[in-house]
Length: 295
Image 1 (tube, one colour):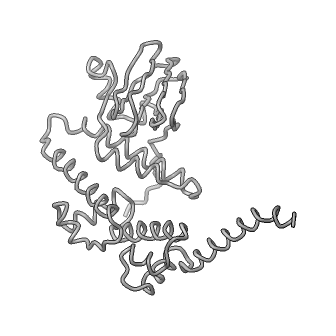
Image 2: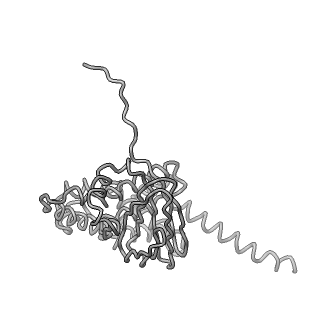
Image 3: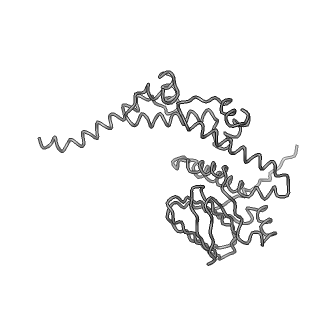
């Protein structure tokens, strides 16, 4: 066996910035790079300028532009619904894409524009759901952004080849998203994986594999997580007994619900309910204290 000390350097370094709501992004490049404007599916039309040339990014689209050194870009976000991710990445970090881009300058004269599909939507949802308190937040968010870029440019890799595989994969994305929507539609129901697979028109193995790939957790873990989050919200309203919350999240027996709740959060639902009641009592006392002081 040969010993090798050769190490491979990480290739995909990039810079990024989030833009939400009404905002202005302005940047001048120090050296040549690609700028990628990623737009969440609910974002409206975006107006921007590249070295004083006016451009428009239609609703539900994304675009990559090549910028020379000292070029400027200014992006105006003028709607509260807008959610953009701006990514700057060096040409040497996108070898395949850069070669393709430079070989066909007329084709990419107005940038490389793609439409946000279901896969983009899933990835943006993952990106937005990441808690910033997570110690691995930066690493997780950067991995998702890389996956978005990969999805964005991979269509170039299959040009002039059999496109049937691409068509099939897009249909699969829709099925995985549908499974997620069925789960979230009614959290009082208890879905089995075979039942979900049948409803969305796929098989158990595919659903398990790609649900984990797209959402970062198994189908059953996702169901449990959503049920527990919903249960916590219901308890914190102060309007429901624990037995009612158990029923509303698909548990026939309160003891089974309590066990699942404690396993997920680390404490029993009654302790959360008592904490809520104690907090309410403290707030009432604080409101009455000035009145009591006058008596």
